[in-house]
Image 1 (cartoon, rainbow, N blue to C red):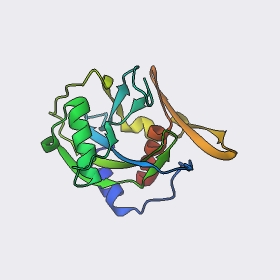
Image 2 (cartoon, rainbow, N blue to C red):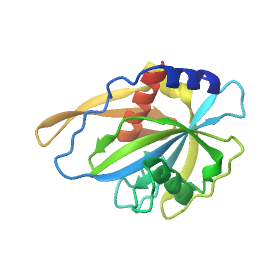
Image 3 (cartoon, rainbow, N blue to C red):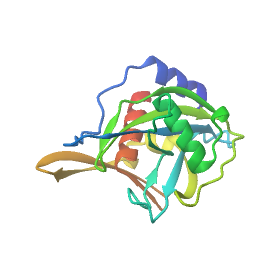
Length: 192
């Protein structure tokens, strides 16, 4: 999918109900992530989704695939500011390279956060510099991969007697799952 087509679909359609149904039982910390889309240098590929692999020593979600992002800080003016600050800290992405186009509804996740995904276009000339303390790898996956129905898998799980869905999008040697996969599922359902 090319940038223009994505933007038209994203802005003209109303967001549907989320595929994510996990509900937390306690007070949640506020966080934001950046769903960054980059135009591929290969004209046939179209847009690619920017992802990271978290460092293995982290307390929350070690070695998992995620979007750049994290906990809101008091000095952040908004959740957009949180996502941009965290992307700058984690992968060295300059906020001037990012054009925010919108956001998805917030997600409650098992580690006790309410996460708001900020959707943005990233200049394809952008460079990255990972913070090795937080990020083990930075990579991109063609958006088209997430649009194929056979790329998505979902299982039911139970926590505290409540059923919830766990989403998966395997890609090459990566297993993209959990809230990241749910956000990708919602985003792709919205633009189909």
